[in-house]
Length: 163
Image 1 (cartoon, rainbow, N blue to C red):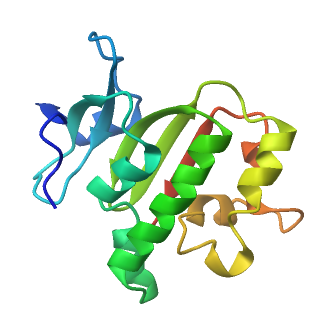
Image 2 (cartoon, rainbow, N blue to C red):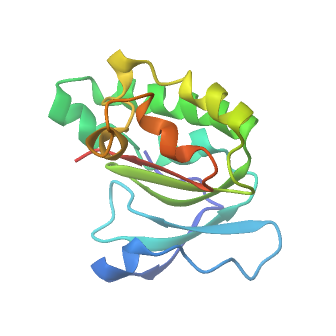
């Protein structure tokens, strides 16, 4: 799926540069993210409209499709499931996407996630969907008490990840 025309691929990144947030856009009404599209040979800085929704970014970069292969799920269904969850999350807590590829997604929220907002986000990830929905890192660090997303409370970063 080609990216929208007004999503501009900028500089190519070295692998170690993908672990930091991208620099902010110097153009009003635009955001930058680190992304790897289907046709890319490496991660790049992308410049896109600030109005691009979390779900639109997830769909464009096929977020979750890598995990679908690992878990025997349909890649298109997984991408759409993740995108719908991210659109709901954006309605709860606004922010900007800083990373997107088939195996990961990071969003920096405009403010730390409140306890009330956390409960709304947690409800989007029932136990039977956690791994398909990208909670691998949260589950692997989970103590078994409460919900794996508990560390999201008070944080400004959501990091979905499929290994």
